[in-house]
Length: 431
Image 1: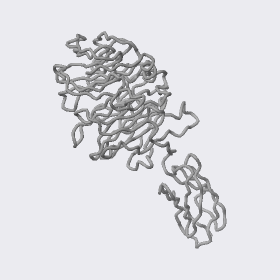
Image 2 (image 1 turned 120 degrees about the horizontal axis):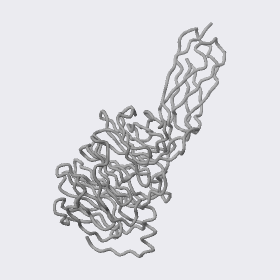
Image 3 (image 1 turned 90 degrees about the horizontal axis):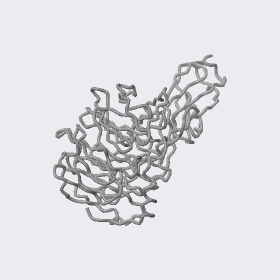
Image 4 (image 1 turned 30 degrees about the vertical axis):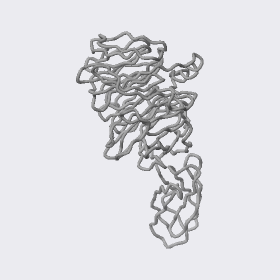
């Protein structure tokens, strides 16, 4: 890895955004330091909530294009209307996004990126603050202030473990084989055995910033753990012994992640993203942030993803997000602020009437939910059409006269003019 010099002032300014900082888990500077990367239908998607909004990008040729940026609708019992984290998951051939906001976990259907549909949400009754989300064997995992929880697709807790890291929940990782939970807590790596439900080993690390983000890589075939501390890359056994160590050229270490074939390691130390041979730590290739020539670049979170076009490495690079190929060549860049926030509805589409039947010319009240904020809604009632306007939460209320038509059973249908969301209810016209 080549030497890169930064002034102490410049380095401090950049590193200041790396700290988890508070239980809310938000970077107030809007920096990109972590997120998720996922291949779905032969396309690479990237998601992050570091700015407080959920942002989703898609790799399109040489561009990492923003698809959507949104926040949860603020409700009376919510602690915040910003997101802590977001991950993507494929279920039944469909792509979903799971996002956390304080003690609330949301699940969105991403069939239409212009209008993610809220499938369900759940709030922790014991005020568990979901600082980070992860995947394990197809299940969504929350890493919170009350521990690690594994969830079903309908957001029921399957299992939970008393593993916490309120300094930085980013540093809790489940092993690829599902047997262990790794927790970098201050200057120690703790190895939690899920079978015994206890910490069974620990290893000492050398750290300058105890709360910095550090991803642990685990090779289940060799039972070896790889950690980037603030001095070196370390290979640590499940007994807590250091087998191999390689010094790096930065005062800060962040992520270590295995390649899809398990033969290589990708590591980040702020100045550089490097690819190493996993077995002997031999240097293969590197991407130097100074070559990017974008102010504020600082490599932290890395997510390798195997795609049908080879492995891609997504780098959360402070002022931007990078996509590299497996040879560390730059494929695409998305700069912070490239996505425009979009209001989102957190309710299912519905329509209700304040009475089931009424006579001609009587007035009835119609309520609708789940439409786009402020959009026009067409209400078809028997042979009449009316217009209503949804509010900022996608809801509307409209008082309508019962049309003068023959007594019969008719439908009342509301259709969003922009979202095309629609819902029908039956109504009886009396004589």
